[in-house]
Image (tube, rainbow, N blue to C red; front, side):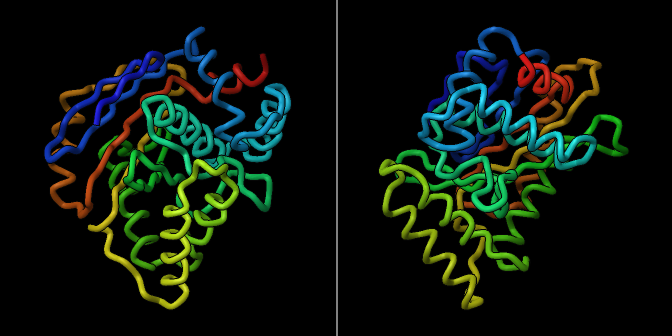
Amino acid sequence: MTFKSDTFDVEHKKIGSGNYLHLINIEEIDSRLELLIDKSIVTICEGKTDTALNIIKKRLIHLLTTKKGSNLEMGAIAEFFTHLYLNEIGFKQEFLFFNLEEGSIKKGFDGYYSWSNEEWIYESKSGSINTKNISHRNKIKEAYDDLKKKIEGDVKNNPWQNAYSHASQMDVDCALGIRKNLKKFSEDFIKEEYHDIKNFNLIPGSTIFLEGKWECLNSADIENKIKALITKFKFKKIHIVCVNKKSLNLFWDYLNR
């Protein structure tokens, strides 16, 4: 796999056996990043619709306002920027950012992607730099653990049904094979026939908000810790995404422009 971003300040690190670590710094929303958001935000949120940019912004403002000051606000903003990045480098989004039923952020898996003929499951964890013991290593571990619980049936709600419902709303470019696979996994979950995480392609993500005080990612340190961490993981293939973001306000400022 080859990746290229014309927008993000990102390093791609090979971490063995065709697996990758993506290290992203977001200090500001500059003109290039603003243009990418403008071009992508409708599709990320609603798919291939003709909704106007200002309407999508208003929907997001309303949604995020209801979650202001909570971990849900932080989580939603973190997820959005990772979706933006993954779309730009070539992953194909097989879901909608907005939840189908409640006008909120989607539930179940945080994202379901395809790349060529491969399917990938994304899970995001985020937090403030002011949180005790916060680190990208710990957030990636949390994201992996959540994926494991969902895939192996240690949750009440069926994440596959949600993913299937979203994929069924996508345009014809969403391969029938993906919907067929998701439907089978959903039915297996109902029958309590669960699967092993080792057979799935995973994208665990971590975002740390720096509360306005900027600091770049320590690439070497994170790479070493992630390489050690994934020796304890099971997966088919894995992409790990770590993001340092200056503040929540960057996205609010964009939405209010």
